[in-house]
Image (tube, rainbow, N blue to C red; front, side, top):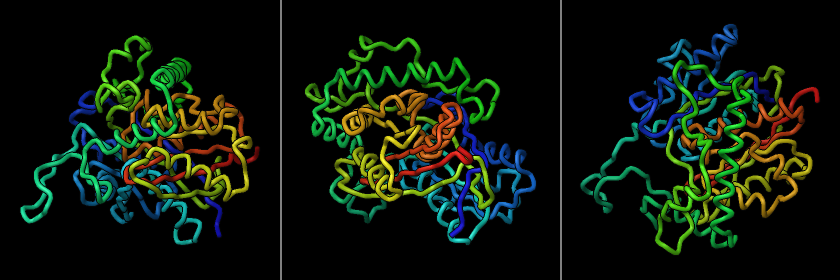
Length: 367
């Protein structure tokens, strides 16, 4: 089997719902990233583009993105929908194809626009009625708050407190603000005039968070104060059989009870660590997609000794969660953390609606 390396990767600044990208279609955001990668590697023959997307218009939006870019129309493209884990799934398919010798160079990642998310309507003969923004994730639920309820169930299971949840939100914003001030993430963010990571709040406080009401009633914990908001963005990486700065060592994919979806990030991590015969003490930088603060609490419960290596630049609570590209954003962030920490191994993991999870282990070459 061929080794698989990451040659490069970029993301856009992440936009808040109905803000800086309110009228920008996600395929144009994605095409901008593809064009930037082409300029960096003009001689690299691309065999495929694999694009994650969760709440777009449907169809092969990855192909549309490729056609809008400077790449040739002869480059195939595929769209993957695994909801929150869409970009990770896209990267997984790219990893597998190169490892199997079916391709040599693939661009993989994802695009999303929550701002332009279409309202869909069930067909007349469907036993489900009405219109919806959020797809059905499991057979027993068509609830648009399914993920919120999942976070609440996991919060109750782990017996977390509201104060714990608030503290993780505050930590995420503080670390993201520091990364912004130091330019820590500048090498992986495409410079776009007038655009920035809009979600970071430097003056957020526990007092302010406590004013935000819980979503599921007064006795619940989950609220907008400890959940990521909806966002817009794009992120892609160039994977290759040629030696690069980072090697993808392996990946893992899991599935479980959709009622407890956030917990799958932990299960994906454990499966991967066992697969590669490593422990968390071997990992120098860790990124979990913190769609909810309870995900951070899960990490702290299971890996308290590794908290100082976790989400070093903050996470989705601060930057946001543009569903279709979050997995690629996580991988880019862990790469940058390894560069700055001069570390060897990095791990990123993400949970997805419907009870799925994906994790990756990467190694900085030459360390």
